Length: 124
Image 1 (cartoon, rainbow, N blue to C red):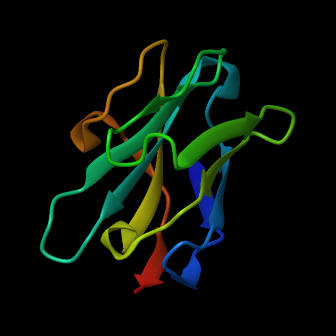
Image 2 (image 1 turned 180 degrees about the vertical axis):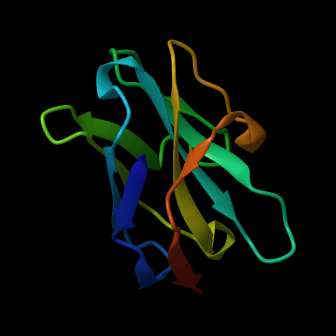
């Protein structure tokens, strides 16, 4: 059974930082793509960052490039999303997602496994 457990969301003021964590089990971690998505009310679920666990540079959406950093701790089967210089437009439910294989994608429908989501709220 695949499980993704997220933590680390919360409320911050603009310019602040948050760090999200996602612990995954039930997949072959060394052969997977891990991704972070976000969804604001009334909007689609958009890809924020992706990372091949076998080792590659993370991919970032232009909206977060230079502010967000995705990393992993392979010993813990856990990925992180460090979010700096947050602004109100970053307010959304953030989801961790996983899929097996050697490629990543920024489209939500290509990920079969999802976490429960963690809310990030940024006030002006």
